[in-house]
Image 1 (cartoon, one colour):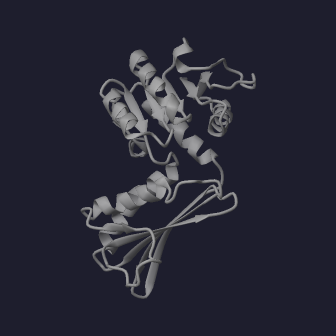
Image 2 (tube, rainbow, N blue to C red):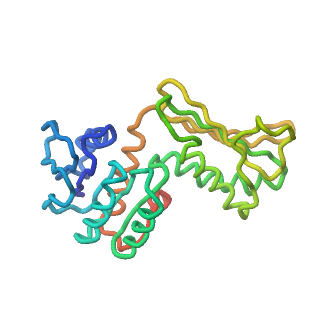
Image 3 (cartoon, one colour):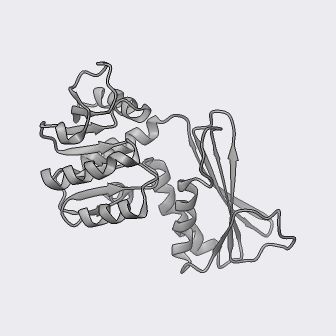
Length: 252
């Protein structure tokens, strides 16, 4: 049985993961951490990670950027692996995370969905075949009307996966409205749609002469990210120090 601490347990993702773990016989939440607690959880909740004296095999983090510094310090001190899912970290914080990975196992990914991370692998093969054949590459991402950043981190990760396979020869184009010219061959267009309650839609389009190939991923609830985080925690428990990502989970 894998014992985890849920860092950010009373947020939307924290509660989603708590529900998923309750139905999973291979993992249990032994403690939670959240600045706000109303007693809803079946496990003890601490206001800060530093107050937690309960041992665990891993920490799953879906909190806020200001809480990450204390989390990383705790994981290094206690030698507890961390599945780091909080976004919006500063460059200084990212540097601290990288430094900490020399002392403890840390898994960080732009998207915790197993489907998205499988797609990242498939896109590399597609890019190797289709880009040399002259196919144009476009990415369209759609999210709910409360999302403030655009394009999404996942869209950029998809573009990066393609571009890395193509020796980073392609540039990203986010807006064509200001320039009246046809697209160049070595560009990846990235478009963002915001509306309603869309959890997350991503389409990667390879458009060639007389044929179009589209890779699509649809997230219908936040549970897909929670399931990925749980799989990551199971994978990371007992791993040596280092920086991991979801591709390591998929590859086993």
